[in-house]
Length: 291
Image (tube, rainbow, N blue to C red; front, side, top):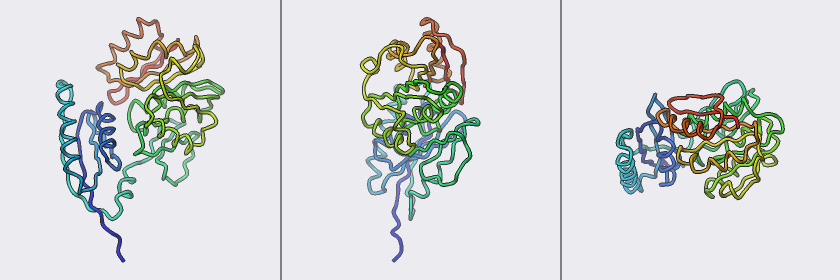
């Protein structure tokens, strides 16, 4: 008997690159079986896969969501939405082929969990792309990983605030940190992080906490902190975040565009945090600071 051919409805959304994560998150929460990301300069094409018999509600919901973004961000958001029915005998195989290893410097490579070929890199991180964000493809994630590769020293205590998929915490542990605390307030996200910690066998080094930072750890507990958040989130958590880093320790902060960076830099200067390095990647900015 031949294999059953299933039909999938492909929703393709072309958007500014800075909205890639938000739109990807929306599609997965709406029921997409996964997302495929293709970046071209300042724009990204995000493709979601839905069962064809359920496509109309998803299409209408996606259009309403995109129109809402266009209304909120009139000066910088535009989109193009298209869809088509595609018949695949094994959709998962086709989707998996879109995920390739992400090589970052001489130390790090990020692989999808199903990748079988052995690579001779010091630090190999495995992720499950459809589970959450922080898959290694976004410029801010890449910059934070490269910064960790520069800064993590043996036995360091590292704080990962807003851990998401857990990819930054995993990197810190595999780079030699003695202990990593991964913090997130979203319970759905933290379940993804737990699975990634098990997959990468870092459970003995990484502790996962759900909740706000002020209730979790004592002041000056960490040698290094990393926070890949939005600008508004950085403002909200900054005092607690800075308080948890030892004097002389480093802080990696990221999650905003080049246009937004001046406000963040001005804020950090007011807080007397020494900016030692700025990393620009595809229109996104990451800062390495010293307390």
